[in-house]
Structures are given as C-alpha cells and as structure tokens.
Length: 120
Image 1 (cartoon, rainbow, N blue to C red):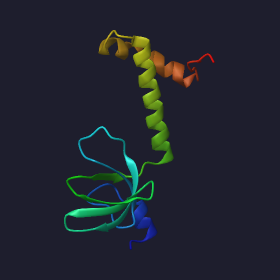
Image 2: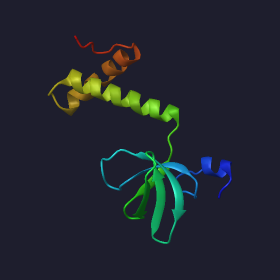
Image 3: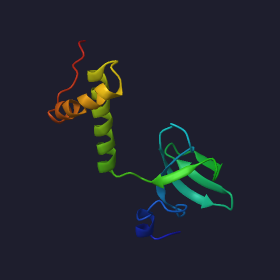
Image 4: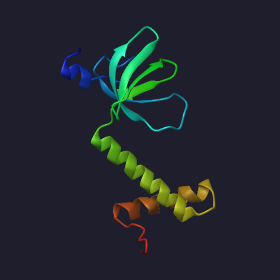
C-alpha cells in the first residue's frame, strides 16, 4: 500500500496507485466523473470501489481515471457552468455568436449574485 502523501500526489500520469482516491468514468462518453478508490490493478483490469461502495472491475479500455478534484476545482467548474447556462439563456436561440456576446454580462450578473427567482 502506498504512503499517504504518495496517494494524494498522483498527477494523473499512468495508472493510479492502489489505495488512490480518484475519479473514474467510461472513456469517450458524456457521463460524469464519479469517485473511485483503486483496490487492485491487474495486467488488463482495474478493480475499484465507486462512491456508493460498489466494487467494480473494468478493463483498462473500459475505464479512465483522473485525480480527484479539490473543492476549489469543483466550485470553479460549477461557477463556469452557471455562467454558461446564464449566457445561453440571455442569448436565447440566437446561436453561438450571441452567446459569446452575452458571456461578459453573464459573468457580471453571476458575480453580483443575481439569480433567477422562481415564483411559488
């Protein structure tokens, strides 16, 4: 089993060491990344536990891993997603150019903490 600091310092190159808390998904999909803990690495398969405690086995062609994101990275991705969604709503059905024009306004509105109010 690797040392604690080795687990935390996996940079995403190669396969994650046994015991690493990382994220996994099936390659070339739009599926979200899910938490995973590496249990064992075989010659052709990875054995890992997902975020729900299920133990899974996948061939290296069926799964990809990346380092677990920090809370700061997650917050930055959520912010970017919220800004993109707002820019889409501001642009309506005018296409990509309109979305690009509305990106700065969406950024400003998001950072000023403006949010859509939904009536009960």
